[in-house]
Each structure stands twice: as C-alpha cells, then as structure tokens.
Image (cartoon, rainbow, N blue to C red; front, side, top):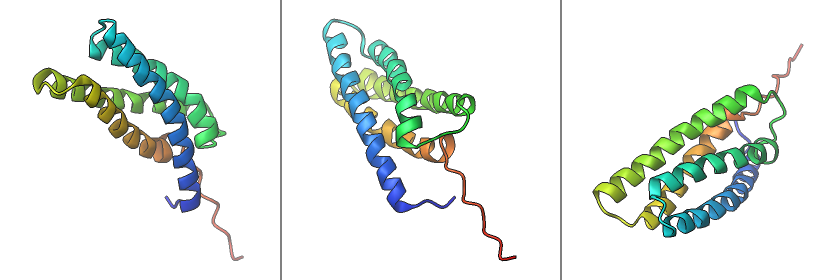
Length: 138
C-alpha cells in the first residue's frame, strides 16, 4: 500500500491532537481515581474503554477521513484496542506489580507506546484509504 507522506503527516498530527486530548484527560482522571484509592489496573480498565469509545468517531471522521461502512471498521477498531489494552495491562502488571516501578510513570509510558502501535494499525488496517484506480493506457 502506497502512502502520501504529506497526508500521513497530517493524519499523524490529527491523531496526536485527538490522542493528546483524550489521553491527557484520561491520565488526569487516572491520577485522581488512584489518589482516591482505586487500584491502578482497575482505573486504567475503565478509562481505557471510555477513551477508546470517545476516540472512535474523531479518528474515523477527522483523523483518517473514513467514509465507508461503520460496522467493519468499528469491529476492527475495538479489536485493535483489545490488543492495546492487553499490552497496557501487561505493562502495569509486570512493571508495577512485579518490578515495583511507579504506576504513574509506567502508565504514562504505556500510553505513548500503545498510542504509537494503534496509529499504525488504524492507518493501515482499520481505516485504510483505497488505492487510486490504476489508469488504463487504452
């Protein structure tokens, strides 16, 4: 699949803006919930679902300009997010529970790692742009 570098940069910037907005709000809520005594993985679980749901419409319509069916991309989107969630959960479980790193730092790093992986899968798997039709010389 070919990709226009300029379009990709625009998508990355829009994705970053959507992600920064959703994730900063989610991270601040994460800090508040854990400060109130909610266990870190439980807080991350609730906020991950809320953030993924909020991000679907913005990423579909604005970031990637997808205009096709909603059903298949939605299933792919949430399937990809299940993988992202599992990675983020595993990072918290290993780095916080077993290796005793700060949950605040691990959650911040995990958010960035997962966001990068999600961008690539959204761009090429969930909301791909159709290839321009090959021109016929006939």
